[in-house]
Image (tube, rainbow, N blue to C red; front, side, top):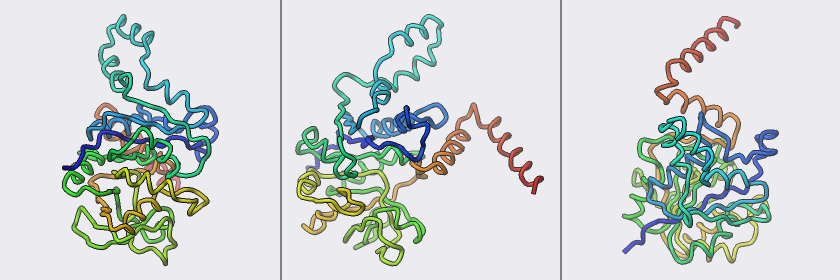
Length: 297
């Protein structure tokens, strides 16, 4: 019988240097798409998938991230006094029950694999999810929920995957496909950030994983890989070497790379247009802007 996935790791120790100067004092994960921080999108997705324990791997300067999930009695009291029940309801999603959330420090920036390894004692011998908040996915059914449902049928390790242009392969871990079953693919191997010529496919791994505790044992043995970092991809590849199953899952939805400025802006526009109360005014502005640019040309 496969165990339920109830724990998730959120690697949030990065410095967010691509968003300087904003990230000099604000954790990147607190930056907002419309009116919700990136981290809130990740938490909501995890909750929808049945996650009950939330493990954050952080670093120095992330205090605002921790405060975000705490209760704010003064603010809540003021909202009640003014009868703003709708805003009180919104705040409920930002509060975490005592004991549901834990914070681990990653003292050195040694890569995603190392960040996951830092949480090993809180994972124990259970399957777990990893969610990268930089990857925001707009989907009717949240991406991790799709994966958890598929995992109940397959077991093993599972990574979210999407097709990318060949010239973009060097920015991702890429799957070497053994069998393509549609939404699911069985992997023969994984290559971290290959050149366009060396990429075994155009099916790239993005920031959602369901992993077995064997991954943590693999990470215990791994030395630095690509980029001088401890790569999670290498630990997953070891599962394949030991003839354990690793699957790629083609999720239904649109992924935004909010670790880049262009991706963050694209997500802001997309999520803004999706909001009923903003759509008409915002789309009108965008249409006027496009018309002005065409006229100027």
